[in-house]
Amino acid sequence: MSERFGLDSLAEMLPEEVEGLQRLLALHEAPPSPRSPVRLDDMPVSVHFFLLPEQVKRLNHCLRKIGGSREEALMGLVDRVDENVS
Image (cartoon, rainbow, N blue to C red; front, side, top):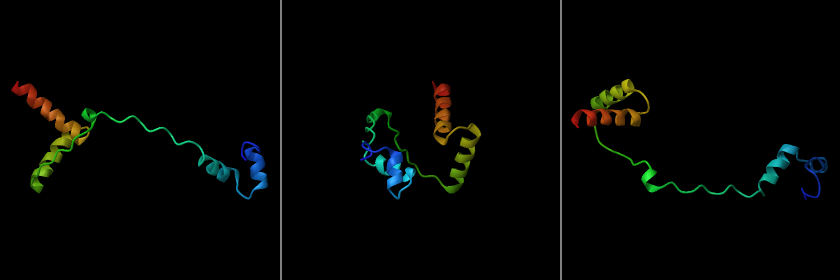
């Protein structure tokens, strides 16, 4: 019906406003194509370990001093250790 009548004509004939008609017409549009899956090697992996509350405070304090996200800061520490050990 929207092809036969324009959106403005439909809005004049029906009680819905133009915005409401646009939302209704959008329901009939094809959904977006699914994204390609991410390679398994590119997926983050969860790391779990247990610390005492005081240790968690120390760890978070150090990670904040380094800056960036917690993950970036932790990996920055790992890089520094690797450089000093090698």
